[in-house]
Length: 194
Image: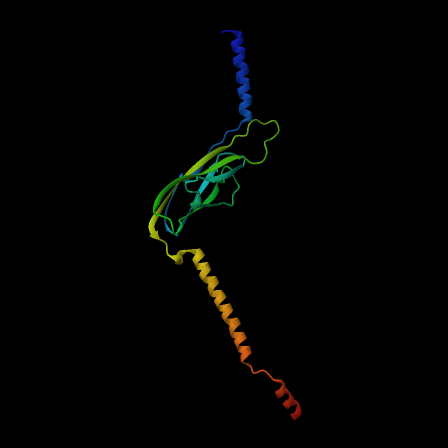
């Protein structure tokens, strides 16, 4: 072999070895991989999934929902990062409006992960990676009972409180107005009697 080719291969190997130290690879995953919801019109269902990694460095993540299901999905999480041994837990609440027609919808929730904080001086590229959880929503032809709706129950409770407070106020006002008021003539008579 030509000494020039051997030298070029040697230099390339040293470069690749140095580059390998600059770019750290990590694996990410989501469990479960699919969330299936079966919702009555006017109802909701809640499920959770976890995003995990083998990285020893905490990874920040951001979540996005596919347009096909975004109007029916609400995401909640207390976690901002995930690290090896401590997966992030995400709560997914799927809603179906009362006016919805029966349908089967497919979409995905995507988590994009990257190392948290800034890259140390002299480090190579920062690589972001992602994982997707498939979302299936079946809206049934049934309509959810109003008494299962938290919003409806809160509304009924507030209405009850307003009625009780308003009734007690009106009762007090009516009770005060029934007391006979002292007229100036009656006051004069009392003074004369004394």
